[in-house]
Amino acid sequence: MSLADEAGVPEDVVVLDTDVYSKLYVRHGATAAKQALKDVLVGRAVAIAVQTRAELLIWPQVRGWAADRADRLREQLDNTPTVPVDVQVIDAFVQITVDCRRRGHALGQKEHVADRWVAATAIAIRRPLLASDGIYFDTPGLELLPLEPPDATAPPR
Image (cartoon, rainbow, N blue to C red; front, side, top):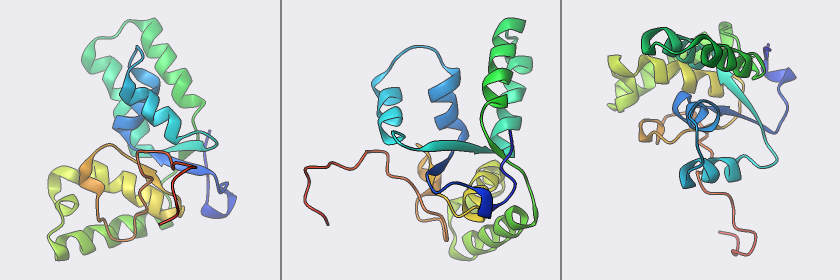
């Protein structure tokens, strides 16, 4: 399943970082952290970057998963909209790379190239990113979805 361009992306879509996706859909068992992520996503649809899909498809081979587990992962990924790399994603990747390097932001470092692709995807389709990794904090042009759902009883800020 693919999301081709920002115009066709529903307003309720949030892009999931690889670690968040794996906590929600790959790792087994119920945890408080997993439930907190689910709570944040209530009423929202999810999508992933090509980078996330590729990273996750590597896992079965390098971790020696049984065929049935690898098949379940592929089926889950096949049912998750994946934003393809297009000109907008490439342009966003270039821009955040330049901006982060100029500002000395850690996301601009070579070892965070995969994270930049995920961030660029969210920026390109103008949707928020849900990540549990602090590397994305204060990334120019990136909207991060807070890890805690809004409290309906709290006064507005």
